[in-house]
Amino acid sequence: MVLKNNINDREMNKFQETVTGDHAVRVIPFGTLDIPDGADFIAATYPDTVTEVYTYKQGGSGGSTLKTVTVIYTDTTKDNLLSVAWS
Image (cartoon, rainbow, N blue to C red; front, side):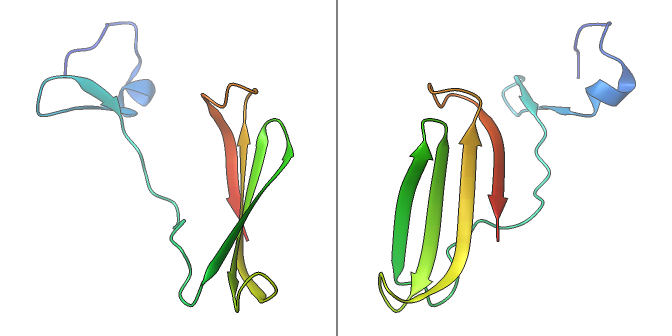
């Protein structure tokens, strides 16, 4: 891969050359955000202008919560993620 000489080896490992010769950021999966087995309802709430909360339930809107995913963006444009957490 040919990148600018000022990128050190540690930073170089974050990039990968694609089949077209472009460069992409290497992503290392660290878990799963799949819909949990048995989920038949998803509620989306927006507690503030940069936060989205998705709650997966079994048994409809009043059922048991299986998973909650909280997405926080850096600003109100929602162009860039700050964090994603699930429980």
